[in-house]
Length: 544
Image 1 (cartoon, one colour):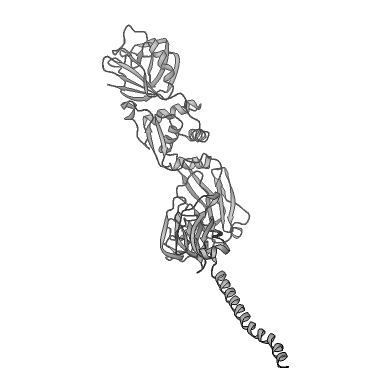
Image 2: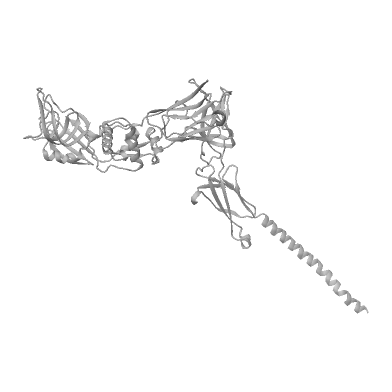
């Protein structure tokens, strides 16, 4: 019986010994599971936007180390960046609202890589922040500062005449920017950059008015100022346009191609079309109702229904640039920045506000007599001759005066990339005996020939003159020094350059001494050869 009892209790003892082992095993598994969960929990990588930088990378304790960070802009262009403390900061200025993609590659620890992979990649697409003006139409009491508020702090602002306004970096990020004390009324375009690594964004027009029961109007550009032919005109009212003018619209005088449209609830804008307003004109806006505007002193209001601006004439500098571009000058012009857009509005604006750049001579052996005539941005004989040639080539009156029709043709030539193909010619005549005539064309001397200039009492005047009439044959007549009259028919290859003085053929027994009545006489074969090179506008220099 005792033996049977021992055998009966053996399984129970075995079970009692196994249970602790199972418990230990379960405990180990639980610890491993908890450890694995902890590793997984603390091995994450987070990529998100940042309040100061472009983005922020957070790698948890078991996540590994950042191996590579890249940022891409539109079209996949690479954006240079710096990574410090997990913050990703661009090394070039980005535009507000620009879409940017950031890729981060993290290398996991070796002991974790076998289970989760060697690397982990995070991708983030975001837009750079944009700051918006909170109040576009402000009431500002006289003598108070104009303050512009944004919906978030900004690091830089640019205000004034766009697109020439310069960005001002602020000492610290600010939600309110003070523009200082300004006129009783005013309007200005202001742009902002929320982050220090951003360029300023698109400009927003803000306007301010004094407290008034009557509707107050401010214009941009300011009334009375100089504007470009294609400048958009903004009329902003202290009250909504519908309350001030109803459905009526202003009238522009003189009539200018373009259209009025409502830019916003308080602003009407006139956008010129084509080349816009005429050069050298006074542009007036007639309002359907009277409003209050700033008076001449800038510190009081007056009531009116009309305002005006001045459109300057085309600049001499831009005239020279266009003539050089078209091949009518012995010089080339090189813009220092982007070329003027080949559009009527852009070219018209450039005509009154010439872009910066530099001129260089097209030919290394340009005669010094010709070089001495040139001056940048000032009227000179070279420019006048080139303009006369352009006018002649385009069937305009060749008077060397840049009127409206001339500017229109010049701008059309610039837009169409039209260029003179016949080259540049220059004639200079030495009056010292033996007298000579030299024709220079496109960097080389074509003809050097003996010539006759005027006799005593009918000398050929010294100076430089453009050819103004070009005739294959004519009758020349006039008065001799003794008062008698002469009339010579059949004179060939005539290029008039100063009153009755001309380059032409004349039958003489010899050449090289004063024999004419003011003209430059040449042998027949010489005059025939130079005639095609001396069209209207060609410069002729008479020198001692």
